[in-house]
Amino acid sequence: MDMLVRLYSLTEDPAGSGGPEGFEIRRGMPWEKRQVIGWIEATFGPGWAGECERAFSRLPVSCFVAVREGSIAGFSAYECTGRGFFGPAGVEEASRGRGMGTALLLSCLRAMLAEGYAYAIIGGVDESCRPFYARAAGAVPIEGSTPGIYGRKLRVPGRESRDG
Image (tube, rainbow, N blue to C red; front, top):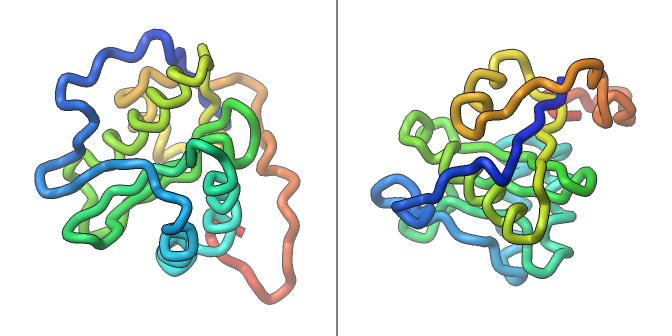
C-alpha cells in the first residue's frame, strides 16, 4: 500500500537535520555515486541500488546519506521511481534504533517541500513499516493503492531478492 504525506504540515527541524550524535546527514555528491550505489546494492540489493541511481542523475542530487567517520550508515532518496515519490531508504542494521531513519526521511521530505511539492507518496509500504511513517511524518494510507507502481516489476528467473 502507498502512503501520503502532507509536506506543508511538517514541523521545523530545530536540530537542523544533523542526525543522531556522531552521524552527519547530508546530500550525496555526484562523485560519490559509485560508492553509495555499491553500498546500497551490497546492503539492500540490486533493486534499491537501481532505483537510487536515478537520484544521482538529478541536480541537486536527491539522495541523502548518513555518514559516520567517512563510512555510510544509511541513505534515503526521492524522485527515483516517480515524481513526488519518496524512497528507497535504509539504515544498516548496526545503526538502527538511533533515530537515523527518521532524520533521513525528514531530510528528503523537507527537500521535496523546498522544491515545491505539497505532498509526497511513499510507495509500496510494507505493513510493518506503516506505523513508522505515520509517526515520523504523519503519513496516511492511500486506499486502493495496492499493488501500486511496484506491482509491475520484472522477475528474473534464478535471481530472487527481497527487493527484486
